[in-house]
Length: 533
Image (cartoon, rainbow, N blue to C red):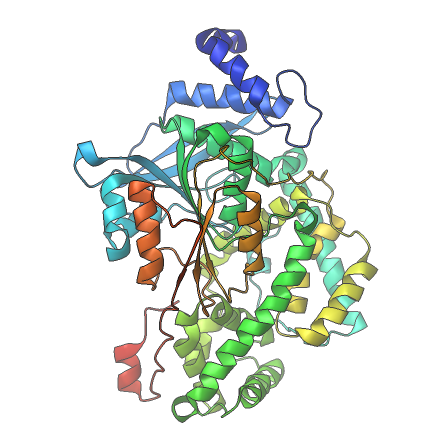
């Protein structure tokens, strides 16, 4: 009955949209796949319902002027009238004159498994003020994240258990242990989610974005996606090309279907090694401050000494090699971490473990959120595509890779290995591609030495999305450069979002300055150090 009423309300508009809907990998019918039809039904329903915004929970730590609400989406788009879930949404209305408002800017921070609920809080930052004057700043928790039908695969306290080891050359016994843990984690996901597990994947995330667009009352979507959010945005553009207004895709996942996700992770581990070398070279240049070595090799030796010492005696009882590695992975993502991490390592080797413990020890208050984010990451990546199911393939590929890229290779394996034992059916990745004129110009942002999403992915996405424009931050490796330290990059993004103008095809920006070292003098540390991370 409700379906008949809805089709009567939207009439030929729904039928014409169904006819044009992409197949998404399933067998098409004259009106698209069942998921195509379900997405249109759900979007029409959301457009009629809207979002009932109200006060935000205090836990979100958003400005008082921000609003929060929920949007209903189907669990299974092939059954839009079946069980549903609610996505939590945050919004700060455009701060400028009503006549200057351009609509909603929807943000996804990546992951998968990241929450974008904090996005409205950026409106007060200098880099975002002009954008926030023209747009409602809209964040949300994707399905499975936070309060949006949250997933869990393991007891959070067990997930956060510390200290842990992180051998660079894992033994056969250690590999067997980690394989067993990965299998247990996959089973935990299936046990927690049940039959719903199969519906947490990127295609449904893109359909959820379409429903959110409709619920916000936007005829077309203006979107900012970072990291995994670029893949989400690209999928949305392929599935709903007529509903794209403007898109900023920042730090790009390589969308080549054959690389989703196993090969992408191999390439990421290799890129991590190059950026880890950048960090060690910076530390070596500042040997006078940190005393960790005059060459990158000597800095590596200092790091290895700390790792060996922590393996024998964890700092503070909770920081072992695994926690050390997790803390220093951040240096590969963001050079803003370089001074703080270098200081902690130097202090630890000089006999003071307190800075390292403060930066690397897991916080029990974050355990639920961290495990939830990992559960969603795992579910989406495992559901999205085929993975090797034979451990021998993983062992062969990564043993060879670890000879060239020892820093991150095995940690990346252990994070993704549950996909070898995944119980849910896999999706077929879409071929992300558009024809000339099918989409408005999209703005792609990328740093040349980004390790988490190697630069080649940005080049490939530009090739595949006709008319897209690439802005490159040269000789830089920060992951996520929109609204960051580079005024040139921010200028291109701001001009695009406010006017729609882009460079002709490609533009480049000089790198932002590398961070200044921090003196080991305590007073200087207190004066110069950035906020705790």
